[in-house]
Length: 113
Image (cartoon, rainbow, N blue to C red; front, side, top):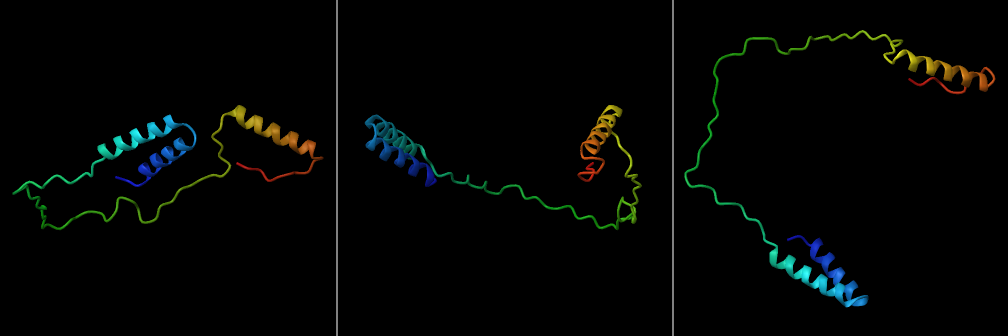
């Protein structure tokens, strides 16, 4: 049983006594039902003479690569690649052009990708 639930139910009972008596009555019923129904869970007993798991020991040497990955991985990336559709690229270029024109031909912020 945790401490938070009975505390909350006790708070509902106190609030009920200060406001409406039927709220306190409902809180008392809920608190009684919780305390009566709350059980502490216990572990089931271990079976007598249960199954014992023993590891399999392999006594031969592994032959093969240390890793499936090469020692030096290289990846070529062109920063100018843009995989967006052409209409998205065109809309972005048009927006940058309009921003440039509105700010009098001066770039107002760095380009974000």
